[in-house]
Image 1 (cartoon, rainbow over the protein chains, first blue to last red):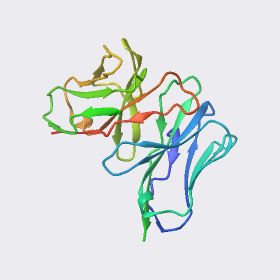
Image 2: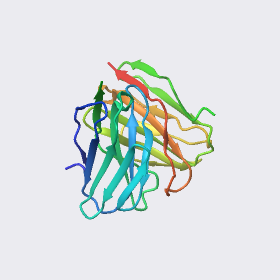
Image 3: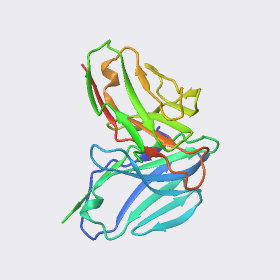
Length: 112
Length: 115
């Protein structure tokens, strides 16, 4: 079993929809939680970074962490075609330096 | 400010050949690392460095060597390329220790095919 599980999709939604992307993890020692966006043939870019249970909002994006359930989510409101990309969750263990453990990524397509 | 720069962008190698993927950052970051990305596997850590002269292995280090002689550069060497090393390679860098808002920056990637 992988340490971090993520549904690979693909996920296709109409423009304006609310998108929910999720990851589950098995190791309770994960302390930092990130979401990266990766466009085709590009490097990952950081979208959201949090370390506590609860919600964190940034514009149209909301990151949610539930440490008791070992479950993290990224919500995208009013989705746009420019949001079409692969979304990767990435976690860091307590004392893990800057070593990221990634989910496999969810491919999202937002259609007009 | 160029950020994290990787070269080459694309490379085709024959089995058994050696090569070096270059990574440079101009942000004076202490931490640098190499990941490979394969379909269905996500990104996996190959090697990382916490500063000049200090390197360590990640999850999938076999077949790769690294060194860190300067803060700016962190090259990844393939000693004897194998088809299993066909992948997309990403270099990443960040400031010091993990902390809130400690952004980890990625390069644009190097696409490697071993035939």
